[in-house]
Image (tube, rainbow, N blue to C red; front, side, top):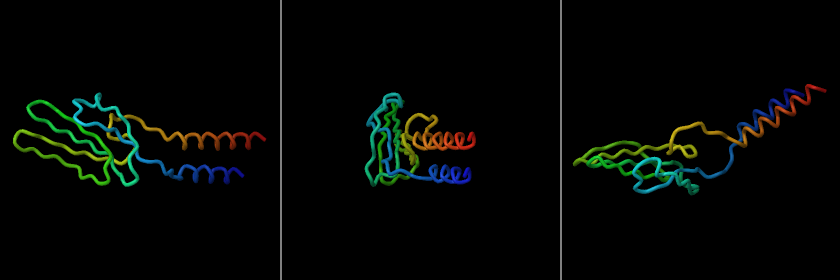
Length: 120
């Protein structure tokens, strides 16, 4: 019986959900601290993108959802630009630990069932 519960737990952890990608969105921010607006991306958006442009010591940051993204950097005429791309929720913001609350809840539920079953 415990093998069944473990199999169900593993299956639950592998289930994906159909929720849209979430990205930070801003235009012309001067720092990451000024870019805290979260947005749900459209069904065709597969990437979060960050564009950083610098000229004469001033920096402008743009963040958005996009269906395609090619990372890179370029410099011309005193202007430097960098594009970075990522594919997970809020990945175009400050780095940190991200949690999957549904997976955590399912795991805890199955763990409780296992513990109750072994106590009988």
